[in-house]
Length: 149
Image 1 (cartoon, rainbow, N blue to C red):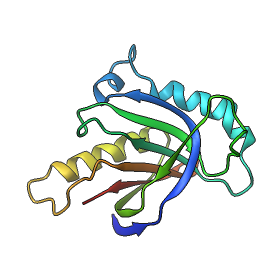
Image 2: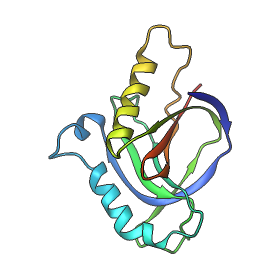
Image 3: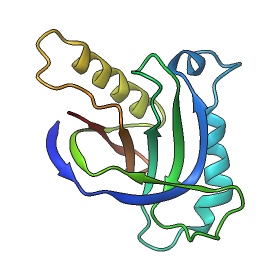
């Protein structure tokens, strides 16, 4: 993991509100369908050099509460998609974790590593619960940046 300051930037895409509990149940999970919609409707409209992100914002409390999740990119024009929304990646301190492997299992496993890290009694960092995001570098490489206080 790497501690770094990240300057804010805007992304556009599709958003849903969910909880980690809902995502554990196939009948209430929303994130898989969100990504299917993004890849069907938004991905073909991305500009060259665009980055793909999963963004987590508007936390109700902590990892147990509701939050907004977006499947999005920094390479979509404001009028490129009907129903698309914009949000800002907040400037600040982030801990960035990386993984390689088959998706979506690699990103799911990386989130498990992150939860274990922040649950540890000797963890030197505290999550800010402002904006966290996944950045997909290829079909098998991801980084997850967690905002910290």
